[in-house]
Picture 1 (cartoon, rainbow, N blue to C red):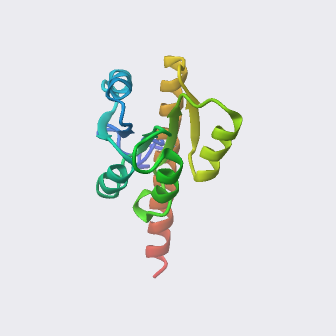
Picture 2 (picture 1 turned 90 degrees about the horizontal axis):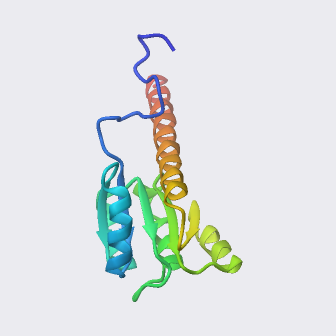
Length: 155
């Protein structure tokens, strides 16, 4: 791309830290995830599926990390509900769970999760997956922006 092109990479808003919401009722797991994420990402929290839906609708995080076992709505039901919210259609969802059965993973992906990682996990792999999801979301935002501009220009 030449220098007059306004966007030369998929990082369309490089001045803004991507937002990751951790949804888990286990404070030790939230703290572990925060420790891994806090230097690169703005981290938000929710203790339950219901709280996650309320907060995510307002803040539209880039990434939502969901536990499966939560008191009100489990992670699968929460994921399905999050996927019905238009403001979150580009948000990426990763289920982070100790449930490692193939049927659990398939249930998570079927519910609308973009990824499913089991505990314990390799920290480098986890961070790479998060980074890839952020890049994908930013690329989709750029595509949507260009489509909007093209439809606006055709009026």
